[in-house]
Length: 82
Image 1 (cartoon, one colour):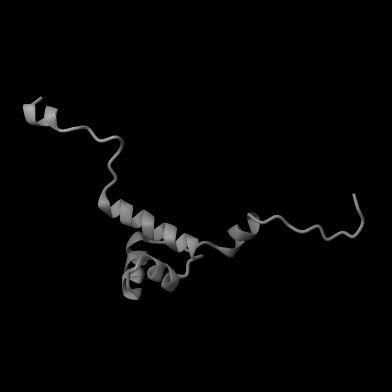
Image 2 (cartoon, rainbow, N blue to C red; image 1 turned 180 degrees about the horizontal axis):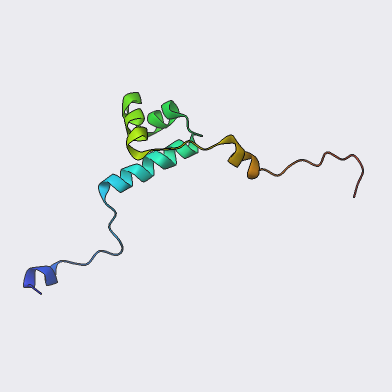
């Protein structure tokens, strides 16, 4: 091992490539905005065409309504107490 590589401090965890960081941020913003591209673009401070380009590049699939239904607790529709 060279003297130079010994003098460089080791990182405190895994280093994520910049493209992966961007992908994660865009996907998280779109998920938080329920797939609303324009709102996500505004929150990220990027343009409308940029978000559409990133969606195609990262092959983003918006959340479905069915998954939303699975995560909600249904209301009790019966009128008699159990």
